[in-house]
Length: 588
Image (cartoon, rainbow, N blue to C red; front, side, top):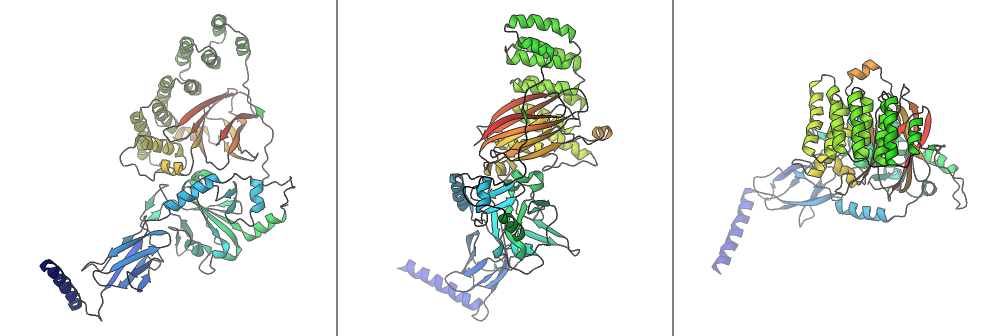
């Protein structure tokens, strides 16, 4: 009983002290600022005094003020954030709150729903576009939000309130973390919330958003559009943007479909199920011949031989006649490896190439490609190190050595060579590391090594995590041994539509010598939206010589995951102006 009386006395004394210090007509005012997890201000946050009907909201700067006594509980709530409850302490009249987004569980449910959705063709999507507000038309095709492996936000044009400087003021309300930066010169910069792509500097994303309006990609914000012009908007961030737009999407992409274009598209669509002539892209695939290497007479002769013993005898005679032709020895190397698995003979042939053609980088690189193709990664590493001796400051050989070390599991050495490249750039006055542009290949592989080996300090929102969260698990890496090679790669979807990438050698010889970023490689990622059989073609122009170009294609499945698989394909292309079907693969 005494204990209970003592407790009641303490409560009573505390209550009296509050009344004494803060009389009823002089309630203390609590102020503060509410931000999101990236320290960006949150407007529209409701702050309520628990157990009462008194409350307020944050302004555009995320700031608020409310009358509250010490001991009162403030409840911070926002439609997209986890609610926070904070008790007011004595002498603490400034309370700043950082709220965490509360969409993870919802996104997981939506992701499961998307993966259960039946796949629809572009034709079917075009038919239902006017009535399905989860569809957006892009230069890459129609994207279905319900099916997309990488989530993005859709905003219906009817929800954009008129007024403000332009429609971005209205859009900002619907996109958490979006910032509109205007200067006195009337220029506008749009920044979207980021998860690892470039990060933030002073609370602002370092990468500006890009824009696409009715299929036209723009670098500058389309402030000329009014809210009344807009049918719908899709805001693509993280992997959703990068997967479709590459480095240009590092800051996210805002895709706008206008009412005028939607009406024009709808005019030409026959929505009857019997209509079979509906086309939703002009880019139909033209004919490409299946890849078949040019077979020189010496190789044709060898291919007819069934006995390994006879083959060894004939190649001994042929070597004398072709002693100055490195491509003869490359062909023989592959023949004895692939057909007879004769490791001893292949070592003899590769040794001859190294001893007699070591200064021909294209030949040495072609040999390294073949060694990787047949699993001799240590041999390939030795060759890449030899190439690096003559091109110490160049990005491609440094990357090749680092990648070769990673292939044999020596991640410490791989990281050392990747870091060496970064250090070289720091020493040059006019060179800078471009992580989501020219140097994206190194960025990806460096992130993969750090992710696989769980290096200390690796951010859970790093590039690799972002890619994997969105299903970017099929990675294609193209490499070529001739710097002057010009060609166009064509990716054909399961429905017969395609997109292309052009490699053009437009630098002069002097420019190439001065540049350290003469990459002879390019990577591509595929998501899980276009399920089915893909086809990869090449329109080969030439390499300004009569020598063949060796093209290596590395196909990574489940890239960055513990069960990652690698398949390497090698193509020897000898004829200029050749259109070839390289390979097909199943995307599932």
